[in-house]
Each structure stands twice: as C-alpha cells, then as structure tokens.
Image (cartoon, rainbow, N blue to C red; front, side, top):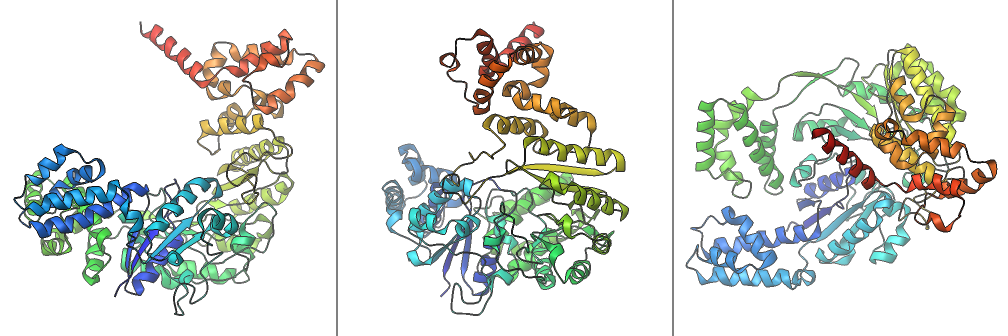
Amino acid sequence: MPRRILLIEPNYKNKYPPIGLMKIATYHKMLGDEVRFFKGEFTDFILEQIYEELLEKLSANDDSIEWTEHRVDIIQYIKKGLSAKYSELTALSESQLVGENLKYYRRYFNKKEYMDDPRWDRVCISTLFTFYWEQTINTINFFKRTCKNIGEVKIGGVAATLLPDEIKKETGIYPHIGLLDKGGEYDDNDIIIDHLPLDYSILNEINYVYPENDGYYAYMTRGCVNNCPFCAVPQLEPQYNCFVSIKEQIKYVAETFGDKRNLLLLDNNVLASKRFDDIIDEIKECGFYAGATYVEPNKYSVLIKDMRRLTLNYRSHIKSIVNLYKWLYKKVDDKNKSSIYSVLYENKLLSVDAATKESILAVDNFFAPLFEKYRNKSVKARYVDFNQGVDARLLTSEKMKRLAEIPIRPLRIAFDAWSLRKVYEDAVRLAVANGIRDMSNYLLYNYEEKPVDLYRRLKLNIDLCEELDVSIYSFPMKYHPIQDPEYFRNRTFIGKHWNRKFIRSIQAILNSTKGKVGRGKTFFEKAFGCDEDEYKKLLYMPEVMIIYRFYYEKNGTTDAWWNAFSSLSPEKIEFVTPVIHGNNFSDIYSLTSDKDIINVLEYYTITRDDAEEEIKAIDKTVNL
C-alpha cells in the first residue's frame, strides 16, 4: 500500500527551490508512494486537509451537488463556524448528513482534534539559514504532529547540519546531518537519494513562486578543498568529490518535466576538481556550449504526457494545466475564446477544485493543437551559472579558456578580502581576454577586514568596468557566525573593526541599490563616496540622511549635520564617536549637557517617519 509522504519547507522567502526535497520527492515516487509538498502557514495546511476530507463526505452524502464550487464557503465555515455559511451550505441538499458532517469537521478544526489524529506516514522538513531559526523550529513542532510515527519525521538541510543538538533540544528530533549520499538512509534499499534527479512537479503544488524556478539545478562537485574559517561548507559537505555526472539527471528532467533554459550549478569550488576538463565536456554534451540556444517546450504536452502515466501524484499537473487554460484563453482571438470557454464549462475545468484527470484527458484532442499553435517558440540564449562563485586563486589560462567554451553568465569570482586584489584583478583580466564580459562577485564584510576595505574592493570593480568596458555586479554579503550559540538566532554579530552604525549605514546604502552594485562611476560615487574620506563620512551620516539623501541634501540638513560634526573639538569627537558607533540615540540628553554634542546627536534622532511626514507636507504644499 502506498505510503503518504508530506514534504515541508518553512514559509520563509528564498530564491531557489528546495533541491533536497525535490530529490526526496523523486525517491518516494519511485517507490510508489503518495507525495505532497507544502510551503505556507500550518493553519492553512490543516484547513486544506480537512476540506479535502470533508469534500469526500459531502460528495458521498449528495453527489448531485458540485461541492467544489462552494470551496470558499466550506473553508470559511470550517475556520469560523459562521451560521450564515452553514445555512447556505445545508440549503443546497436535502440530506441531513450534510449538516452533520459540516458540524463534525468544524468541531474537529476548532478543538484542534487534528493534533491527535496524524494522517501522514512520513514528514520531511527542510531547513535553511539559521537566522530563520524561530520560523524553522515552529514549523517542525507544528508539522511533526501530523506524522503517525515521530521516528518518521525527517529533518535535514543547512541549519539541521550545523546545529543538530539545538534542533534536538527544541523539537525532540535529532536531524539528519549532511547529505543523503549513502544507500539505505531512509528505507531498506540501496538508493542514494542525493544522486537522484529533481522532481520539478512539486513546485506547482504551492502558491509560492521561487524567483529562480525554471533551470536545471545540480552539483558537479561536492565540498571544497579550502577550510576558510568564515565558511560552513566543510561541515555541510566535508568530503571533496571531484566529479558528479549530471547527464542522466538532465535527460530525465527534460523528458519528464520539459527542457530547461539555463544550468545553475551550486558547486562550492569547481576549479579544485582534478576532472575539471570532464566537467566542461559534460556541460557541453548536455547542450550548454558557447552560443547554445533554447526554445521553450510545449508545457501543455509535457504535462499531459506525464499525467497519462501517473496513477498517483498528479495534483500539481491538474493545477498547472488549468492555469495553462487561462493563459491560452487570454492569447486566442474572440472566436476561439467562445469555444474554449464552452469546452471548459461543459467539462468543469474552469477551476482547479472541480477539474479531474479524466476530464482533462477527455478534451486533450481539442486543446493540444491550440497549445502547439500559440506556445512561445522564440529562440533564447542559454546560460551556465556557477552560482557559488569560482576561486580566483585556482584560475589558470587553460581553465579560463575552457570556461569560455560554455555560455557562462555571469562568471562569479570570489573577492572576499582586499589582500586578494592582485589575484582577483588578474582573474578578471584573464576572463575579458577570453571573451567573458559579464561577471559578478560576493564581497564578504563585517569579518576581519576594516570597513574601508569593502570600499576599496567595490571601487576596484568600478574601475575595472570603466577600463575594460565590462559588466561586474558586486553583492556585499554581511558575515554572520551562524553556528555561534550567541548569534545563530539573530544577525547581531559585529566584526572586530565594525560597529552597529557602520553596519546600518552599509545596509541603508544597499537598500537604495537593491543589494547590488553595478557598473557606473557616477552612481557608485554618489552611493559610496568619490573617495575614502567621503565613504567614511557616509558611514557616520545619520541613517535617515542616507535613505532620503536627495531630500536632506537639498534642504541643507546634511550640510548642517556635517558642519556641526566636523566642528567638534578632538575631545568632543572622542566622546561622541562611541555613542554614534553604538547606534542608540533613544536618550541622548542623559549622556551629556554639552550643547555642541547634543546638537550633533539630535540629527541622529530623526526617524524615517519624520522624514516621510516632512516630504508629504512639502508635496501637499507644492500641489496647492
């Protein structure tokens, strides 16, 4: 008998889909199990689960009613017990069992009886960064109650690997540490889950849309040969594996879920591989060579083909196909609109709730030619992205030539310290010499370097963009010791050369640049300063004057603050500096009675709300 498997990702925002859960989905479907993926609030999951069970009861009570058309009212009654909703629903049928079932499931939800009535044979929960700690722990503690056997609650991922004892302490469950890279880790078989292809269909079961959701995701190496003290990779992937073939995975995904445009590789240090040439050769063999192009497959035909072979796990297919019907309806002319609507209406395919596999397949002959006619057939360029970056210290002329054989965009080159500027700059120039002109990097800050070194690295990129006429996007990344017991729950760590004010200033600047710094000398100099002295001034500038830069510069407030600050005597500067560094201005008048110091500190008490009220008032005056 198929097991019921529930896959859960906590409801935090993240860019990439949960690769581990996608492999686990493939694993369980191989074994013939029923698999469900959920990302959202626990209460919403419970309501949906209760609704599905109640729907079966109501259909059995009276199958002359299309109960799926009343989904919203049914869920509202379960959730709130509104008498008006109860009256409306019971009035639809003469069966007394309808009212009895409605009351039973309302009580079942209201009294939280579902907590003592688990329905799932195994629950797998992923974890990500530790600054999502509270949300992750709450998710585990809620969803573990849905599993019939607490021993079948499987927790894995980044936070689970880095802080297993803390997770055990707060949930009672000791998580899986590291990768699922051995056979028999979940069941008595030899299947290595980490080597399985990804199940993309589960992503269509949820409402959350990952910003990066339609590429091939893979690793061609595991681990890293370095042991950088700021990095968690040595714990997450302690053994370096110099080659992981992705050929079969890509073939399976293309045949089952449709070809993907781009290839995103999550290797932590691909250049360290002794089989680097084999890696490049296989990437090219998989269709990602310089100049490679892509045409989006017929999504409808891919879904239909896959759904025909399935006896379980086609919920997401139904949802996706119904959404495609809506897309098609908007694309066609008025004549076809009328025909499409009629077919959908007659076969109860206007909503996901009413649609069935049988009704979808029954109208396939009508829709198949329409989707083929109107699908997107434009030719697009393909790209490869080593998303975690490459190690400039390991780049050679030969390796760069090989990287140029694949459509790499962007080439991400790590630039974690100013001391690496020579090797970093050489790598950039080598890339340009081989025709690679789109680059990116992550810039670590708040670690051991001084704040000025972040400015120097950013400015070097701007200068290289100007000189070489290339594009380099920088992403400053704040260091956070995610395994430190004092800091893993929050992001309050301050590096030895940093302070709270400098951190806030950098974050305020990055807020205006949307977290990245691209080419453009004028923009950079406005954001970070035209030299190191201006950069230092920005670090000390009141936060609100950074965020609303143009407003406060125009009305003279910024100049007034700077004149007051720079006019302080050395003794007063020595007094006020640690106050500013602490970034706490809630009670400045208790610190000193010195009028010059108070005058400076009062600028730091201006809030965003103050600024927005001032700006709104000026706008109203202008409009009058």
